[in-house]
Length: 67
Ligand code: SF4
Ligand code: SF4
Image (tube, rainbow, N blue to C red; front, side):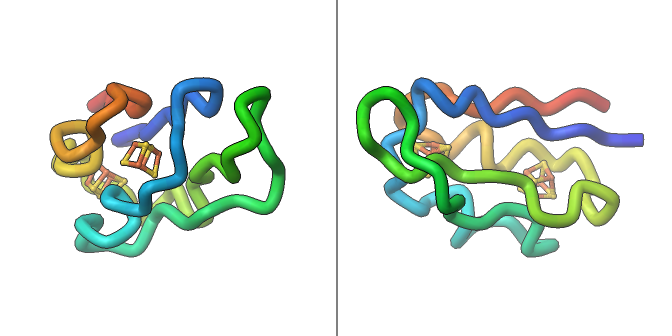
């Protein structure tokens, strides 16, 4: 099963990955990371198809996708 991992310490909460995900797996979280950004969290990992679009679009290389 595909798995998406957000490296929350690198996330700047830009929302690009949330917008591009075709399965609406990701959402802006409610906990600030050490830099004060509300890092993205996977809200329904079971829907992830491993397309890796989120990882490609992230300007801060904060997402890893495993297939
Ligand atoms: S790999 Fe694809 S389906 Fe999975 S969270 Fe990223 S954009 Fe969404
Ligand atoms: S694209 Fe990267 S920096 Fe932007 S919200 Fe998603 S994980 Fe965070």
